[in-house]
Length: 254
Image 1 (cartoon, rainbow, N blue to C red):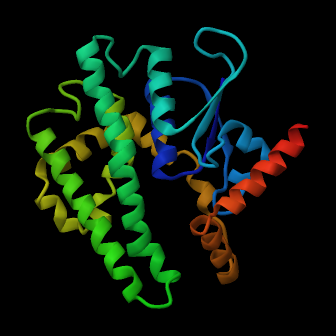
Image 2 (tube, rainbow, N blue to C red):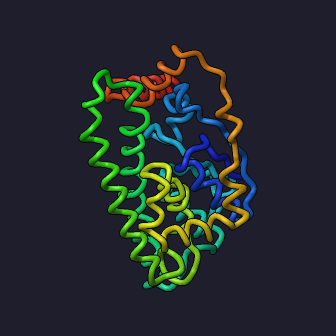
Image 3 (spheres, one colour):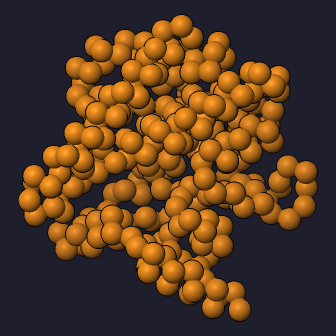
């Protein structure tokens, strides 16, 4: 059994989709990132970067003690190796896949996260809307560029890393299908090959199942003050806050 420390976000969906695609048994352990669960001593033992998703495999590849892994890219690579699925063993083909996995981790995910922050969440925080203009332009513009990169790649390939569905597609789709909402729906006209891929991959049953995992966790009735507190926790994390959480975790282990 694999424990998945999870919240229903694009990064969380990467792991649940992969588990559904591989047909592996798993157990969801909710990590309420707006409520501060990512700073608990128990979670920091698994994910020292205080970010979900993370997994604990109680029957790990190669045997031995339960194995904890954080970072979605590392998790997908591990699950692909464990099951022998969605990652070629041929060296050239393997690295065609892995370069796109790392591209998503370094580019599409962070840029879309920042764009979403400035365009949607920032307006609830910044006192002066002008403070948001540069950030919004910068990161939405970068999402536009990255969409062009994917569109060009998919104009000559069925999938991101070539002719076969892989962890490159699994890790990228949970962010990519949201591009129309972030820029605007008409942007799909600019990226027809990307839209074709988003639609085709989105029809896979495992994609649908994985994306629906834990959606009920978001159904929280919160006051305006509670919403404000959650935004403060999510978007104003500092070294001091992380250090305090780690010290608490260390004391709990002593």
